[in-house]
Image (cartoon, rainbow, N blue to C red; front, side):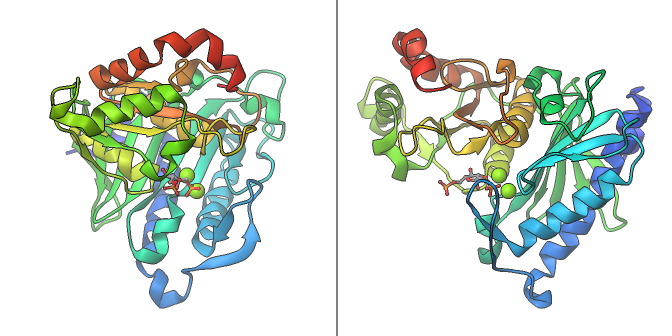
Length: 333
Ligand SMILES: O=P(O)(O)OC[C@H]1O[C@](O)(COP(=O)(O)O)[C@@H](O)[C@@H]1O
Ligand SMILES: [Mg+2]
Ligand SMILES: [Mg+2]
């Protein structure tokens, strides 16, 4: 099977985009190595710092961020980067073409307990007349992504990628190459599996509460079938399960902080995952509108997310029908 560069080149992918993806892969291979040895090299655990979002940073959040930042900003094709762990975008080459947005380590609370984490990335083109040091250059709808993907550091290190024509999967081999293991990942349209943090139930909108109540009622309720629940607390891993065998994942709007319409970040979590899911035949929504059509207003903007198997997301959207127009503005979604 081809490696990722061979596959993209054979499909006449923009050669500069192919180079960029190869560079991301090389960098993530390094991150995988550091994660594997983390307990031996003393780089597990939290730092005293918090990021701009007020979240405690793990040492490996910062290491992964610095690796990606340094490797990408060296490339002449890179106009700038934006990251969960950087307060502001960082400019690259003023002549560069690409803006890369990333969550260097997603699910980093899993690191210390040796559970899967991942790197999520999104690639945009810098608009004419702007540069990669300006936030406004990045504020493009998810539909404009040139590529999106993640590297999952699990039992296998796996790259899942879209450049806009389907979703491919690659596995890191012993020679440091990502070899293709699936050329067209497709999410089954129906499912009996859902992923949501049930501990937040009381903070959700009534529509989400009643939809989930239907899942929990199973064959005793209107749905007439039993569901199973999974929650890995790393979006990258939950989404990988859905791309592999179907299901739905949601981190919905909740009322814990009215300024935030959800926990997840639009630009480097919601958008790239939504692009992958749509390219694999699934749906991604805030429950009030399509995530990929949202016009971003801030680089670290939060978003409510529900994504996965098409027919199940349609049931969820149906449960929100009455609320659509009245609530969307009020909820900041
Ligand atoms: O702590 P909770 O509510 O289970 O949240 C888990 C969610 O938070 C995240 O870990 C946020 O990502 P980061 O680790 O990059 O901040 C998601 O990956 C995951 O789905
Ligand atoms: Mg994350
Ligand atoms: Mg993170």
